[in-house]
Image 1 (cartoon, rainbow, N blue to C red):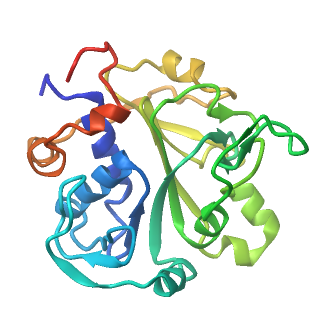
Image 2 (cartoon, rainbow, N blue to C red):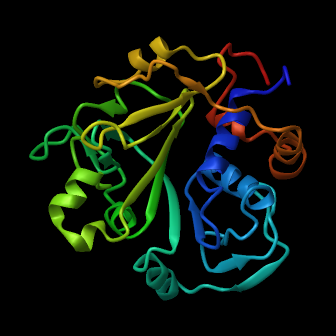
Length: 257
C-alpha cells in the first residue's frame, strides 16, 4: 500500500519481535512498543499475556490511551518479580545508548566520576536482560545512541552476561533492536550488533552514517516488511485511531501522515 507510514512499519516490526514467543508475559515500555505488542496479540501471537503495566492482566486489547474493559486477573508486584526471575517474559524497553556489543545505557551520560547528565538510573534493566528475553526500541537512530561503548552498562549484552557466568546467561536473550531506520540483532561476529533489515525508503548508507560504530552490513540487505492490510486496519482503526504513533515516528519528509 502506497500510504504505509514509517510508524506503521515500526509497529509491525515490533509485533514481529513478539510473534514467536507463545504464551509469555509481554512487557512493552513506551508507546510504539505498546502498539506493536498489542498488534502481535491480535495477529501473530494470540497467546501473548498482557498487563496494564500496573496490577492487572488484560483480557482484551484496548486502544492506546484507553482503559481495559476486560480484566483476566490480578498481578500484584510480588508476582511480577516471580515472573521476572524465571524467564517467562519478553520486555521491550528504551535505550539512551546501545554499543556494538549490545550493552544498553539508561543511567547516565559521561564519565562515571562526573557524569554530564543523569538519566533514569538503571531501573530494571540489569534484571530484565539477565532474566528475560529483552528487546530495545529506539525512535531516533543516531550516532549519539549507537556508540562504540556505553558510558554506563544498564542492560547487559551477551559478552558481559557470558563473563558473569551461568546465572547471567540462563535466560539472557537480547532478541531485537528496532529503530526508526532498521531492525538489528546481536548475532554478528563476536556477538555484536548485526543489521537484519532496513525500513522501506531507508538506504544502507543512512543506517551506517547514523551508527557510531563499525556496523556489519550484509551484501544483500533485506527490507523490513510492510504491514498487511489487516494489520493496517488494526493499527489505524482499532489500536491507534488518534495517531499517537506519529508523535514518536513522524513521517521522514515532515508531512502529516
